[in-house]
Amino acid sequence: MAFSLWLTLLAACLVISFTPGAGAINTMGNALNYGFRRAIWGILGQQAALSVHIAVVALGVGVLVASSPVLFAVIRYAGAAYLAYLGIRLILRRPAPEAEGIEAWEGAGDADDAPAPDALGPGAPAPAVPLESRWSMFRRGLWVNLLNPKAIVFFLAFLPQFIRTTDPLLPQYATVALTAVAVDIAVMWGFFAVAAHGFRRFTRTPRGQRTIDVVFGALFLAVAVLLAVLH
Image (cartoon, rainbow, N blue to C red):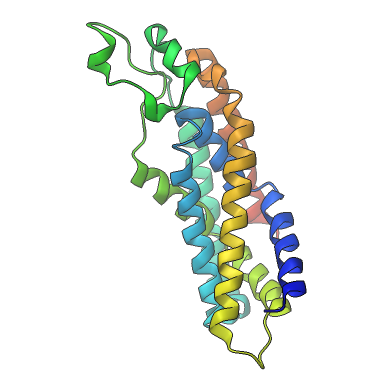
């Protein structure tokens, strides 16, 4: 791929990644609840889904999805239902009792740095948000991005602009995939996660955690509605 074409690809990937969507909401929610470093697991799941979308388009399956109204609708409504499920789960989640004894490490570092409950002393309260496993965060990030047929259709229109059929295809698709993934990780972790991490102080109390859950739950529901009704 020519360097000038790659620069155009880089700019396009930056614009795409900075466009708010379900992935950005998921990243910010993870950073708020579990810390900046731990948010990377959800981001990696989202990148796995992005890689799948690119592979689907490269293999020609994207044409099938785009040309089949039934298949497109099935994936679209499944994605909307999953985002709605995440939103409702957040809204209904009840915060744990305030962790007065752990405010020091909450303000100083990430959830990864949190001491075990036993280390906090007898009778010490649990953290406001119990840690979600890395695999669970990865899996949630994967499904958030994977169940979005519009991403497949987008890449179906986007990728041909940067692929030259007269040149070997595999290196070109690999370049596109690596660029898109690297840019998205940088934007999600270096911008959205950082922006959300600054508001972690709101998660120190049940009221603050409740507010965060309702806000992000509502955002997931809004994206679910948009995915379901917009064609």
